[in-house]
Length: 172
Image (cartoon, rainbow, N blue to C red):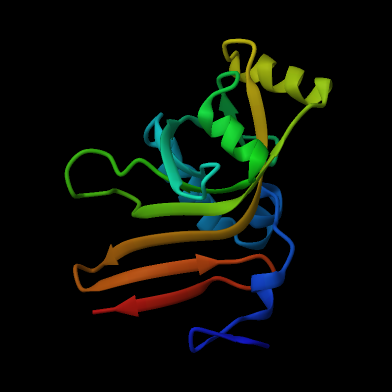
């Protein structure tokens, strides 16, 4: 293990990313909470990396279908071009109005893989009916984080990374 900025890296930091279905199989309860949180609102926030390396945030709709987390985008949108150049992304669930944030705050990080397979795109079109043409990306997860308040006392942070069980931190 190597140390970075005084922190020791875990073996999972170098684990292969996981597809959504792998996460669901490994941590079904957390996965259900994450899907419910994303399902509460239509629009969420996607962070990508611009050509110069600076972050870009944009609105996005997501879909959980057939064991995958899908990102669909307009043709040649800047976020699609960003992901083609550098597939790393972070996705933040819409917190909704006010401060209640039912279900907590949810973030997903990973890599987006563009789907060129005609059958996979056709199946997506059949279920979602997006405007065409469009870019379709399948996600590979490197981290899922859920943060929420428990009993009006604790800030609870649940962190999952491929190859590791969920780690839960409680702070007062």
